[in-house]
Length: 360
Ligand SMILES: Cc1cc2nc3c(=O)[nH]c(=O)nc-3n(C[C@H](O)[C@H](O)[C@H](O)COP(=O)(O)OP(=O)(O)OC[C@H]3O[C@@H](n4cnc5c(N)ncnc54)[C@H](O)[C@@H]3O)c2cc1C
Image (cartoon, rainbow, N blue to C red; front, side, top):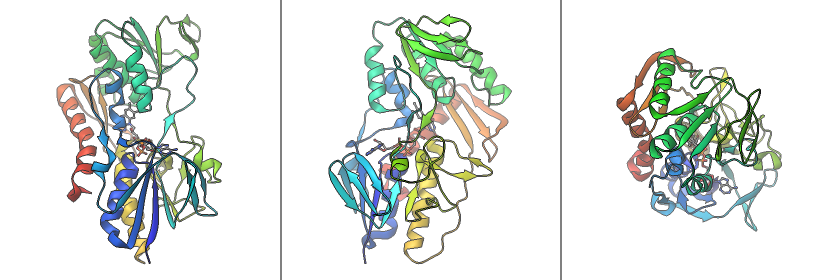
């Protein structure tokens, strides 16, 4: 009997999962990949797109393994008890569901530009010409990358980077030193110890120091998963992610596998942070585990570890922070052009896997 598998979301995790399932299961499965746009968006390059670089997009049809059917539409609802989902106006049934709808910006205030989605990146790109100042709120990995990219691509632009904490405060001293030097070189003005309490068209309001004048404010304050899972009755954590077991299945609905940013994966005592570096290997694992289950074999539990945090600081500089398996920083770092090249290699690796069938 053919198993109907619906894969929701053709980002890094969903696309990889659908292709690998097709390779492993062949005619034993009918795989439908549902996505709300016809192109694959390299989310890890959105800061480059926002800064005005021509990155290009990839038609999804050209990235699919034989046997994967593409359905373009918006997933509006899941009904796990009935094993159905709604795409636009149509209800689709499934035997197995892969939930891979990714994430979006968490709690984005009014009067800000986002960087978490493709359309947001384009809006920011189109709003920049003629502007003299921009404030980036949030100096996490994404905030540091967008601030650097904007400063490098728009040399006349005054770029402020605002956070309560020092940029890279969770990284090693060597990494933090390099970040500080890179921001100085790029002219990024770093404001630490400042909490953003609101944003107006005049700029962000900073606790204790009034409004920081900025014509545009970019929000890089963290990510949350879509509320579709919670609305459908799947238990979720505080950021909307679905807690999963060691086979990446929902605890309550084992016929639902969750991968990518939407999954709250436990590893080494913590919840794995949202990252491509977790989503892709975990999708590889989850496809193997699901294929084994469908063949009546017991899958092995997930084994996962991080190796590095890769931060681009424009196109010619970067930091590669090597980490312990639980993501704590090691004292080893790469910086400068070598790190930029490393990061580019890793970034293009995601596309290379999707384009080369033998790697899937
Ligand atoms: C600027 C930026 C830089 C980043 N840099 C890095 C980095 O250097 N390293 C790293 O590891 N991670 C990085 N990340 C994080 C990384 O992009 C995410 O972890 C990764 O994209 C998650 O993959 P995913 O497949 O879960 O979700 P996504 O890539 O977000 O894919 C989700 C897919 O689902 C689709 N979708 C969503 N909702 C619906 C719906 N209702 N109906 C139909 N389709 C829907 C979307 O269109 C999309 O195709 C970065 C993120 C950003 C924004």
